[in-house]
Image 1 (cartoon, rainbow, N blue to C red):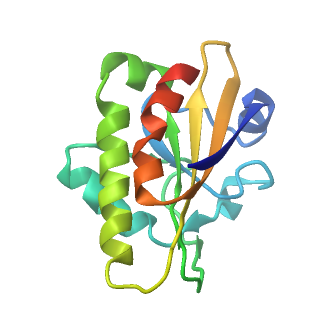
Image 2: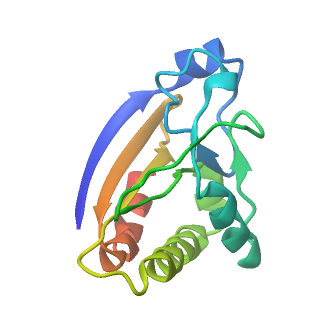
Length: 159
């Protein structure tokens, strides 16, 4: 399992973009920290399909900044997943939300890579709200499906 953890403050960025930190699970854009306005948000192209999988598992994910027309498609053997935000309240209210979300992601990656040759990796960012107001921790994950499932303990320990 290959991942890194970063901590960053979101208050100034969200205020500049006229946004508030979501109180649920949400998709974050790839360029959250560099976008100058919401209209510039870019999401991973498989977000739409992945959102359908979440809905089938009774998980509603919002899209930060609302609907978008900007998607990034990568022509690569690896799979790039949309960034996912877990609010502190979502984790506290539903202790299984992290494990269910990781299972949905794992199943999606497994199905997407089924039948391909060679070792493929999934790339995904998780943003986790911390108890300290305005601070978010980000996990950058790059690895296989089994490692993705192993992130549950890491995510739950960050809140």
